[in-house]
Image 1 (cartoon, rainbow, N blue to C red):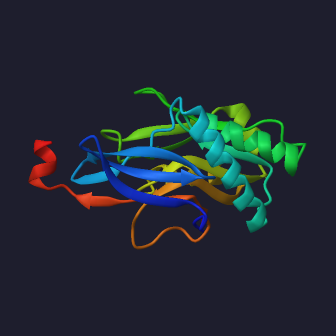
Image 2: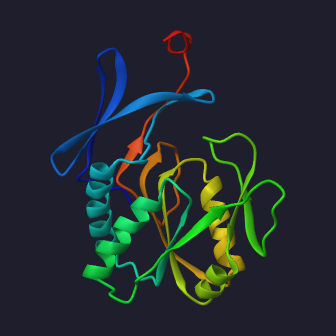
Image 3: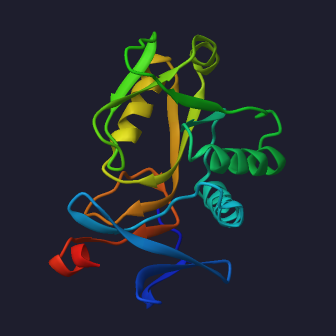
Length: 209
C-alpha cells in the first residue's frame, strides 16, 4: 500500500538527475545512481534526521489506518536503525505503550555461525551475507507478532532473510513497512511504503556522466 499523499517528480538540477520527494509540503532530493545494470533513484537514510522524522510520521499514520497490530519491530542493521527507532517511539506514544524495545538483525562476520541465521544478497552489496539474531533476541521474539521495518524494498533478498529469522524464532510476521520501493511489476501485498524509486536500464551516456 503506497501513500497517495506523497508526491515525486523527476528533475535535473545542476546537471544531476534527481527524484524530488515531497513529504508534508517539504521537498527532499534523491540522486540517481548506477547500481548494477540500472540507474536508480537512490535513498540513503544514513544520518538524514529530518528526512527520517518526516517519513516516520507518515508511515505511522499509514500503519494506524491499516490496523496493524504487533508486539515489536525487527529491522536489519544498520541503516534502518534510526527509522525503526523513530517508528517505535511514535507507536509507543500513540498506540502501544508496552512496546519499549525493538530488535536488530545483526550482520555476521565471515566464518561466524549462529543458532538463528539467514543468508541474503542485497542489490547494494557484493556476494552473500548473513543476518542473525542473538540467542536472547530469538527467545524474546518467540510467539510474538513482528513488524518488519527497512529503508528500501528492492529485489526482496533482505526481506526473505528477515522472514526466515522470524520463522526460526517461532514468531509471526505481522506487517512490513519501508520508506520506498524500487518500482517493479509486483510488490508484496502486505507492504506499506511511501513512494516508488524509479529504475531504468543504464545507457552509454549515463556511464560517461
